[in-house]
Length: 211
Image 1 (spheres, helix red, strand yellow):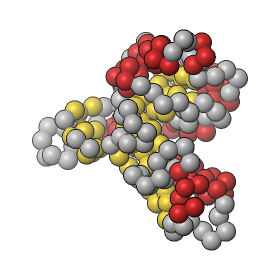
Image 2 (tube, helix red, strand yellow):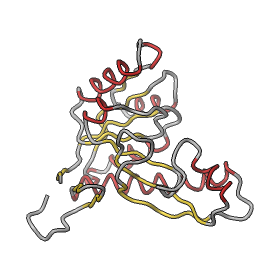
Image 3 (cartoon, rainbow, N blue to C red):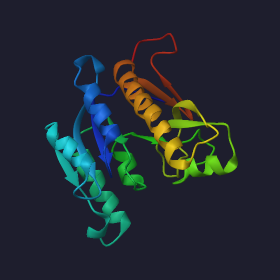
């Protein structure tokens, strides 16, 4: 079991950075308990980096193609993250699978647009629609070396409506995902969190000394 609190966040982005913006907005309030200390990306010229710069947040970019192997890239990303001494790394639409060096740099929180363990992988929304489910949703999890296999921190259901296509359903899930991610990161910051096996609990649930 580990007991942790979150104060310093490094956020990883690959695109527009809407989840990043939600975290930046929330952390502007000191009572939120966490603040973004750096934003990393795997490519230049993305809106997520612009959002970070406008907020005065340091940024870094590590491109996979700049390294001879994926393992070397992962070590470089881990070093960049470690330089900011984060309590938590948040993958906010970061479209790369991270390996052991990065996962060891700090706990990494990720989101997925389905109710895991159902519909893991890159096409969770499409797969849920194809399966004909009536309810899907989003998951916030602690990342491990698998694909969407880490311990689940929180989930919220989203109904599938009769006329939904992939784009419409995904946008509705993203709205819930942003709110849930901000809520969970804030609670982890203020209340602390524990991991025991695959069980993740936020706050002091044991009745013992507060974390």
